[in-house]
Amino acid sequence: MRDAAQRAIGPHDLWQGTLMANSARDPLWRAFVSAEIAATPSRKAEIEAKCLGCHAPMAAQVGLDDHGTGSLLHVLDCDSELGELARDGVSCTICHGMSPRGLGTEASFSGGFRLDDARRIFGPHADPFAMPMRHQTGFTPTLGPHVLQSSLCGTCHTLETEAFAPDGQRLERTLLEQAPYLEWRNSDYRDEGGDRGPLAHSCASCHLPTTGQDGEVLRTRIARNPGGRNFPPTRPRSPYGRHLFVGGNTLVLGMLRDHRDELDVRAPASAIQATLDATRDQLRQRTARIAIETVQLEAGKLAFEVVVENLAGHKLPTGHPTRRAWLQVRVRGEQDELLFASGLTDNAGRIVGSSGQPLPSELAGGPIEPHRDVVRSGEEVALYRAVMADTLGQPTHTLLRGVTWLVDDRLLPKGWNREHPEADRTAPVGTEEDGNFVPGGDRVRFEIALGDRRGPLTIEASLLYQPLGARWAAELLRWPTPEVAAFGTLYERADRTPEVLARARWGD
Image 1 (spheres, rainbow, N blue to C red):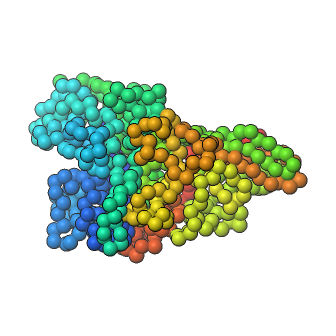
Image 2 (cartoon, rainbow, N blue to C red; image 1 turned 30 degrees about the horizontal axis):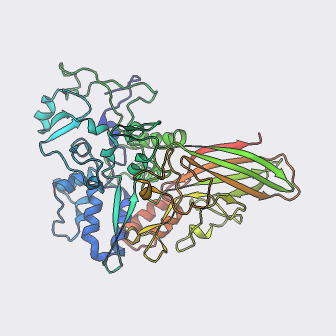
């Protein structure tokens, strides 16, 4: 399969370099699993089974086996057919093999999908030429419109975790750890069950696009002879999805590319780089916009507003709460001298204050930076992130201690509605007094004392993003497990420069 410019777009060609293909090799995920087990060792088997259910789903569906080692995670490294299935991550037969029954319901979430029991493989096309697949694999290609629906993605990307005390006692509390599907349901992007929002797009339209790199609608045969020839009964069809699975985890993609042998990655570096390029393109071009407005300089005080617009169909950032975004703002004088800065970072990706030292909130055990509607100094930063709280209302970075959100000021999607059935589960926390934090974006005011300086001035603003916030990294690296140590080595070598989602400038 090729696009109009003859680029390879076969599903395996694109899938192999994604985090879906490498979900069980992901060193950050392995480190987090080990830290959760270290925090609650008596729940080891349950933690392993739950995590493997979505990160090694083929092995989980066949049946996990610790092979006498006492650890289900053994399957990730063992030399067996089950081990091969585990290491293949989220492969074709999981997404295309899901039964449509129950999708979008509570029972389907947290990896609660069911595979079709008649060995059917579903796709978006009627009357596919079935003989070759049936002959080679025993599976029958079948029309299944549900493969294009967001509820299929929602099975693993709606994740609820139980809370436990350190001794393993169940606390009878749960946390909706990640909910991009539910956020999408409560947005203008919704497109499900006849309920179409004004910006209706499915998850697949952004993360598995049916257009080529140059924007053309893809149309191709959906099967080829193993020798590279066309089967006579086949014909070009549309839609055809590019299996890019672009997300936002540039950090781990870089690790997979740079440490292929160490992480047992089968994909060539070029395939991972293609995924990384597509991910950065999506982050920079289709994720957010910012603008600088209402600039005033009076009596030695500069005031202006940075307006942030969320272009994603869910919260920004979404998914696992390791992710964060923030505003980086600089004010420069006539000679380009730096007069003010907020949100700058050091080489380790930590946000620094006016002295150049990391803010206390960037360090393990430090305070939690509050939500800010107004920024007045270089020691303050406008962050968009989620921080969990334990049963005592204290911040925690251990999932199995989390029972609620201490703060969740991730940007809401456009159309988010307080009257929607999913509103309670996707509501922001800690923004109640901020009338500028609204569905679709935020408006942050900057008030800066400049003394007798009158201008001319230049204002630069950027919306930055990290797949793994520096504070989360610091908390994780405190756990003395081999997996955390291995990740720490990779993290030390990684380029931790934040991704730029959007930029604006005033004063040129």
